[in-house]
Image (cartoon, rainbow, N blue to C red):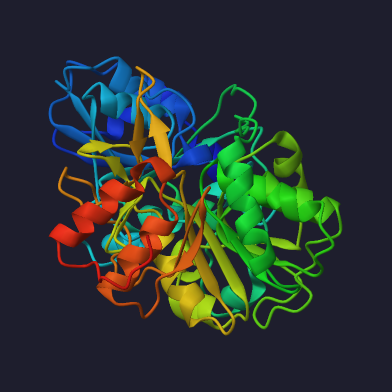
Length: 454
């Protein structure tokens, strides 16, 4: 039987394929552009026929029909590993739940059997001549999910590119970004929307100020990791216009910031000790120009975040500069990047992975960035630096691992600092309107010395 014959034998309509889902099943939609929109729509039509079906996924770009068609969760309950974008809106309405994780460990939850998968559904690029479907920008965690599934259904999306893998890993028998037709149970086809483009809003004055503080800390030949959010992209644009040379990319997320650096001749990967000459990433979000750049480009390689985010892999590179956004911090140096109080807004992601790995990197630095303050709907100003976390804030980076913290007011390095030194440093980058209040609270907590600066 040829691969084409096998393909035809496994071809189903979306409605036929989702009949594989039974009461009580755990299903998985994988990640972002792996979102199986045709299968999701077909499964949503089975509302009322099914009971207690649970679904995992994260970083989805399009509406989830099993959520929107079943807000009472009579048939389907969706659980997100990272509640960004549309998933955040669902969370705010009480329609979904969240799964805490450390990103580099997510694959192991499936490999060790902690996460059962009865049916896995994911969008793939068109099959190649060797019988492989490419996992494109969803290679961060998709393959372990598919390997763990009892039934695998792939949805061929005509717009998805093919992303190159790391030859060294494939030589070790680790095929992170492909699945062979022999591993697939059912295949569905159909028309899809063009790929969703994710565009950052214009930079705020605070983001520009933060970028100005970080830019002098980045040397030639640095290897960059840029996290989710507007600030990392602002910094990428800042560097693209600078005279910096020979930057590298080793990042769980690749965005337009890296494409802009490449276009300006700043991104060469020429001096990386590992994967020299190649940008390495796990997921992707950006413009169509970025997607086109990555399509079958051997200089841009996708792999699982269990490898990309491994602190020992990160630490094997020199001058890793990790830049991630956060929501708030306290005077002890604890950092929250996932919630506002108890209201969940994202997830741990790879922040702690790269905070750890960048510190292990010779010359490496990890920067956590936030506005010093914010205004509420009534226009009242609130500090993003708190005396201590007491409102249910999720600690994403513990005080014992915090390196650099940056606000629009300045930049501080907390590594090795005492509690009273930390308090002084954190007050120095707080919004001026709140500094006296924070000092008074530090005194109450016994972490302010008389010799501290005011």
